[in-house]
Length: 78
Image 1 (cartoon, one colour):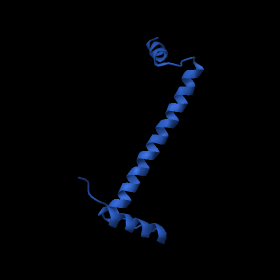
Image 2 (image 1 turned 180 degrees about the horizontal axis):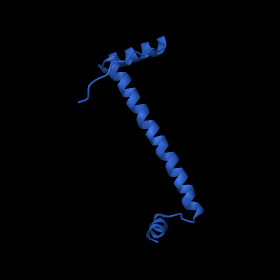
Image 3 (image 1 turned 90 degrees about the vertical axis):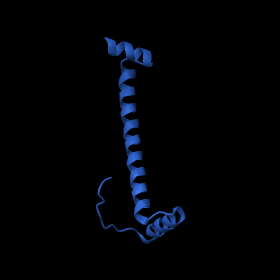
Image 4 (image 1 turned 180 degrees about the vertical axis):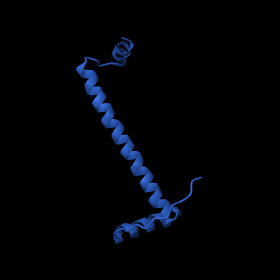
């Protein structure tokens, strides 16, 4: 288990209130709700980056006439 690092953040009043409501409804601490939101944002960012990479390399493959996994395997084997 990692050591927690304390930070002070500022939130708009409505966001702070909503976070407190979520924490109460889920039986979690305010901090746990914020941590979960940050983890979700990190996951979404990683997925977005992966989609961008896939799109880039898919376009490069199409430029080479590669449109199937079989063609890709053949290209790599060359």
